[in-house]
Image 1: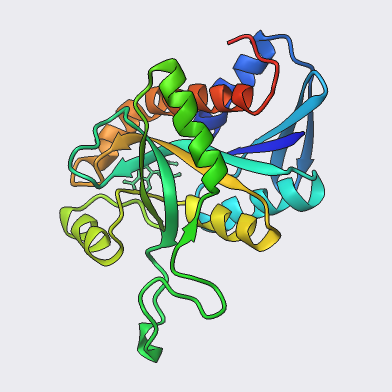
Image 2: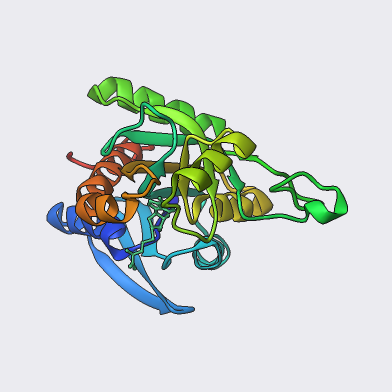
Length: 238
Ligand code: SAH
């Protein structure tokens, strides 16, 4: 099996690459389209890991390359997000039920916010992968929330913008890549799921919180992603 794991920032993929090195897995790398793809062999299975750089366009490039060039059959996204739901705290782990692009607006033509003709406002993550994630969470005793993720090319750091995204999209968390990975995977018919650990609350102090908790939150998501791989049949001694 070939599984692709995408992060947006180097901090989000480093814990994964280090873990595989620590487990003695053979690692090769290839540069393509401005990104480095790590190819890691775990027995007969392979995992491809890359950070895309921030934002929906970059993440779409990486997801497309993972699928169309490297032949990844499933895509997992691992990273951090701003919490919108009141009870989401820094370090909490969330999996996307469905994802939308909060910065898409062609409402001047009568379309709903977030909607693109011939596409959809919301794209659901793969039900089987999400079910597996909940099974893994139960098995290792980790609390895992599921909710709507809104993505856009903006770092959300204000109460008013936060309230607007909650009102318009019913979102539980906000970030800058997930929905574009959803669009790509949906277009190619590749199952995907998105893990996000909360780094901030998308409010007036989001920038300070993000800087303080990026690394620890990224590790929470990365560690869970490794457990997912194990559940998918990768022989990992975790
Ligand atoms: N500090 C970085 C920029 C981080 S942008 C720099 O200076 O280069 C925020 C990243 O974390 C994005 O990849 C996004 O997916 C996620 N994220 C975390 N909190 C967010 C928030 N409040 N709004 C939007 N994206 C957020």
